[in-house]
Image: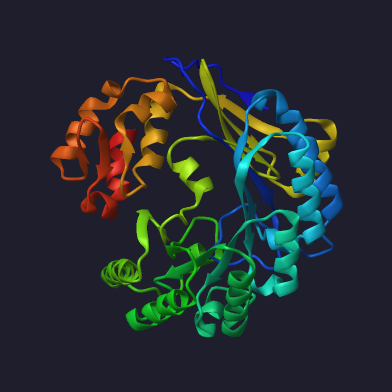
Length: 390
C-alpha cells in the first residue's frame, strides 16, 4: 500500500454525513462502452466467498468510522442484481450488526433488466433494499443491441413495470447520443420512461471512454450539434413532466432525489468496500482517499490477509478545493458558501481569484450565501472545472 503524508491545512469542526458504497464487480457480459471495474462472469461467481470478503473489509475499516452513523448504502457494479437476494440480505444484516444506520437510511441496488423479475425484486426489497436503480439505457432493441446490452425492449419494459410495482423509489438510467440515434428516437425513449413514471431519471450522454472497445473502434455517433440538441430537448421534456434537473445528469420528482449521490456532490464522506471501491473519509485534521485492490481474485485474497486497501493518500489543499468544486458544481443549485470550509477545512478565500474569473466568464453566479453554475457553466462544465484545477 502506498501512502502520502500531507496534512490538512485547516481543521474540520464537524464531520460530514457518511455513506457506504458496496461494489459487486461481476456482470453477465461487459458492455463495450463501460470503463467501470466490472468483470464478465465466465464461471460460477464465488458469491459466498465475496460476501465474507466484504464483511472482512468492513471490519478492517471500522476503526476509521467508529461511532459514525451511515446515512445511505449503495450497491454498485458491475451488476449487483447478479447476486441472489439471500446474499444481499446477508450483507445488509452483517452491515447493520457492525455500523449504526440512520432511521430510514436509503439503500439502493443497481439492477440490469436482463437479470431480474418480479420475484427477484421482491426478494431484494425483503432483504432491505428500499430504492432500485434500473439500467434500462434504451427502450429500443436496435439501440440495446448496439450498446451490447443483454436485455431487449420487452425485458426493459417488463423490468421497469415490476420495479415500480415493488419499490416506492425507483431510478431509470437512460443514455442518449447512441449509435445512429435520431432526435425522435431519443425522445421516444424518454417519453416511454416518463409514461411509466419513475420518481428519478438519470440521463447520460454516451461517451467514448479510454480502454473500452467503443474507444478503440468508435461506432457512428450523432455529431456534437445533434447531441447538444438532444440534451436540450431532453431537459425541456423532463421539465414538462415535472422532473427537477438537480444534477448534471439527474432529474427527480419532488422528494425523490438520490440521497446517496447528493452526499457525493456535497463532498460528504463515503466508505467503499469491495473490489476496486474508493473511499473518502474525513478526520478533524485530515481528509483521506483510499482504493481497494481492483481484481476480484486479488481482492478476495487480500481480504483473507486483512489488506484490502491498495492505496491511501491524505489530500492536499489543492486536491481539496478542486475536488470540492468538481463535485458541488455538478449540482444545478450549487452550494451554500459556508459548506466549502465546513467540508474542506479551508477558507473560501483561497479560491477567490478563480471564482472571480469564472464569474467574469459567465460560468457561475454567486452571492454572499450561494455559488452555482450558470446555464452556460452547466453546458461547459469541463471548462469551468478546469479553472479550479490550474
